[in-house]
Length: 154
Image (cartoon, rainbow, N blue to C red):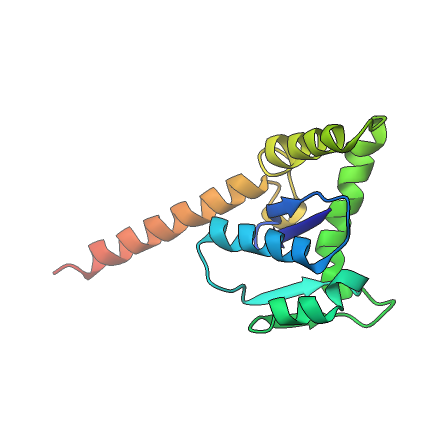
């Protein structure tokens, strides 16, 4: 599974489950994330040192993006997404006997889209879910802007 996490809210904004590990699948995931966030390029993209992330094709795909790589054996730049991948296994997938690709896709969809982003709380987010944390941030921006505009009117 390839996934893209917004480090601000820890929200999984894109994910792709594949039966092969190739750079094109990573690109597909990145394109989904860019479309969902309505951006042209991510500011920073962090990845591990897996073969699909160190290939010439991946370098071509991510040419205009700011790269953040950890050295082999020191995955500190990538700990949030690695932690997520451990969580999905520990909290969900390990409780099922996965029958096939379709079943795996359904389980991953349920975890990410129905639980992780919607309800799972995170200490990083002040014990809110990623969706609630983003919603709170947007409301604070709107309220601060409204307060600024109200205080600015003479």
